[in-house]
Length: 110
Length: 236
Image (cartoon, rainbow over all chains, first blue to last red; front, top):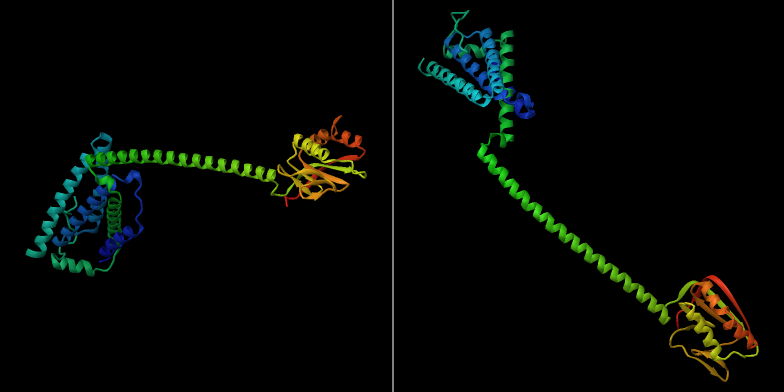
C-alpha cells in the first residue's frame, strides 16, 4: 500500500517540481526508468506467484538500474551509445511484456 | 534477474489474495525501502516525461532537424534583408529631416535680418551713441545723412535719430523749421544711436575728415560714447 502511494507521490513531485536533468545524467535517466519499471513488473509477478521477497526486489531494482546505466555508459565510450540504448530498451520491453502476460494469467485465469 | 527464484516464506498467498495481503500489510522497514525505490521510479518517470515534452527538438529526427535549420536560416536571411532596408529608410528620413531643419534655421535667420532692416522689431545690443549739440542750428539734412551713411558703412544694423528709427525709406530733408527725419523735426541735442561693433562704429565716425570733424567745422559739438547695451525701438 505504502509503496503504491510512494509511486504516486513521486510522479506528482516530479511533475510539480519539473527539475532540469543534469546534462551528464540525460542519456541514463530514460534507460534507468525502463530498467526500474522492469524490476517493478517482475516484483508484481513474484507477488502473484507467492514468492515475493523484499530483499530480492531491492537488489533487482538497484541492480537493474546500475547495469542498464553501465551498459549505456560503455556504449557511449565505444561510440555505439544510441544503438545499445535501443537494445537495452528492447530487452527490458520484452521482459515487461512477458511479466505483464504472467500477471494477466494470474489475475484472470488463476 | 527481476523475478525472484527463491522464496523464504513458501506459504505466501497467491493471485488476488497476494494483492489483498500486500495492500493490507503494515509498513515494515523493508516496505519503506520499497516505497523509497518506487518514489524514485515515479519521480524519474515524471521528470523524464516532462523534459521530453518540453524539448521537442531532442525527439525530432535528423532530417526534420535539418529542415528546421534550413527554414531558420532562410528566415534569418529574410529578416536581415528587411533590417537593412529599414535601416536605409531610417537614414533617409533622418537626413531629410536634418535638411529641412537646416533650411528652416536659415530661413528664420534671414527673416530676423530682414525684420531688423525693415525696422519692424526693436533691437538691443552693443553700439554707440553720437550726441550733437547744435545751438546755432547749423546742421543740415546732408550732415545728418552723412552721419547715417557713415554708420551704415561701419556695419550698423539699426540706427535711430532722436528716437526715430532710420530705415531704407526714411526721408531726411531740410525744412524751414529744421531738419526733418521721417515725420518729426529733430532738435538739439541730436542723439543718434547705432547698433553694431562699438569700436568699428566709433572709428567710422571719428576718422580725420569724417563726421565728427565736419560737425566741428560747422560750429557744433559731437560726442561719441560706446556702450554694451543700446536699445532701439521699432519703427512707428
